[in-house]
Length: 267
Image 1 (cartoon, rainbow, N blue to C red):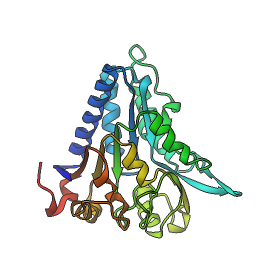
Image 2 (cartoon, rainbow, N blue to C red):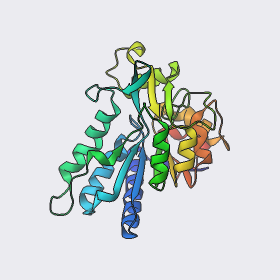
Image 3 (tube, rainbow, N blue to C red):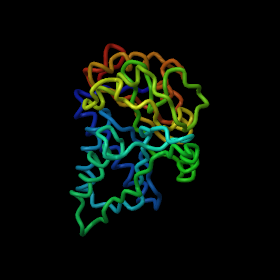
Image 4 (cartoon, one colour):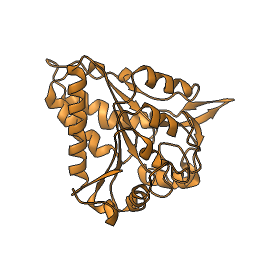
């Protein structure tokens, strides 16, 4: 695996955002669409902010750009499931509106670009999760998938430890360790008992099969174990689902100096 260490999380975010904008420019210049895969939570927040700033200056027509989100919390609804209300503090829909959609539309010039539409942000549907795999495949795949690893258990999206390599998009029961990690992601939770027990999510097989490029991002001291585990991996290990990055096309791991440890060489 290619591991790149950046001086800090802001330098990492700036580099990844620039890479994404360059990819968008190339795709649009070739008359193609661009699909960016993205998790919710702490990991992509600085990258999304840097991306908004760059897209605001780029003057691009973003009508052929799609943001494909990895997951959303879900609750049981009879014999099926539905996503949580976007008004809740931990809703991924609320997160992406606050950190991408609203700020982007605030900086786009009305003379150069139409607003980025909510319809351009995709989520898996807990009632029909496998339809998401087909939708991403029909779109030509995900041009760049931003990935994140759970700090304590290596979950990726809502794929818990023990997830089989063949797992596709589904409704998952959140592992207790994942719930604990989510307390840091959404600090307004009063305790682990408030974290929902279910989430709809892309599967590890989905990530590996639809991504044209995957970048695992790890920043901060709490991700040192994740970086060490990923650096030592050369194949998927169900005990640490984030190792699926080793089986993605054109994959890389981007870390900041705090998270790096001795396993990665400084950029």
